Length: 410
Image 1: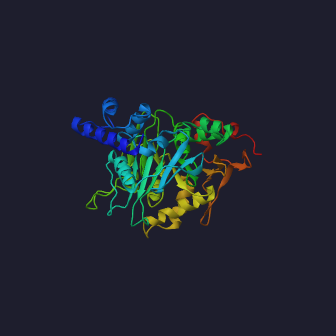
Image 2 (image 1 turned 45 degrees about the vertical axis):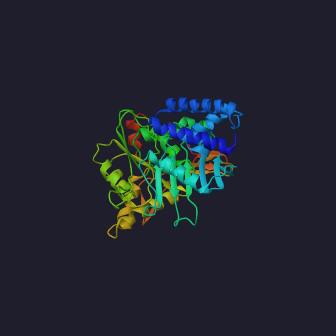
Image 3 (image 1 turned 120 degrees about the vertical axis):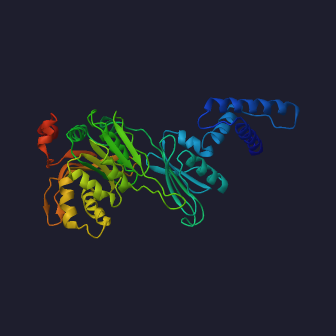
């Protein structure tokens, strides 16, 4: 089907949608029927007029549906379960990531198409991107995360990134099946979560931190109330009693912004049994530490290249909260608040693996926090190290035999 014929059909479909006051995101059946009517009319006119007959009616229907109800040329990548991420550097350079590896697609867009796609993606979120707010984070209806940056922040073109929520694992047993960690390590982490230990999930970009955090939440006892705080909704906590919150952008007048730090503070007023922060980047880490130090169990993720670096970063980020916050307060607070660090990495072959699981016994030497290795990867094996976690009594109260869980060090 020629581009001219497609544009003609799309214009007819959009005009009918406006006349009938349909919402393509909600009235799926009505929009499909409407597209069928437009194609029938086109077929009739092609028999008596100068219109080119449709070579593949089914394909035409699919393309029109993607254009008016989906996200146009990007929709096939959003529908492809093998695609993990989509990004646009410029209209003629659309990339996707499959199995941790990037590839340039044959998709060619125009500047206006990119702008229209972004506007359509932001419509359901209520967020915006313009000269006064040149960055935006938002969630798509399917749970994918959208990030956009526009000039003059970028050099010339709009930079668009869509990180899909690919449901590869729902619980730690799924990660064992995928080769991310061993069965013994999974049993230990299950027990650590159920026993109420505080867990920090660390790793680089696309290492699988959010997936790991989602799987850890599956081990939370079903009677607990969980409050989650995120920049943009990404966590999928499948529990009965969950309150989920996300940040809010400032208005056009520059007011009304709700940062992550505010969410963490508000979460403590919502009777949480456990608090989960999607990712700590700035001073909100101080409020999280204070909450964890008060006896409230919790979990969060952080960008770091090792368990040691994650702990060091947790000691420095709270200093951003103000000059009155000192490392002499932060370091012992981190040592007593964080119990377990899980570090993941994206390997060269595209597989996501747990590189190490470390414990924080709670002891410090000056401003250095002691770390005990529980599991360490050597080659392809995530083997038991010689460390032990803190709070053995919590494991016992939850009905777990810590010695049996960890076995003998190798």
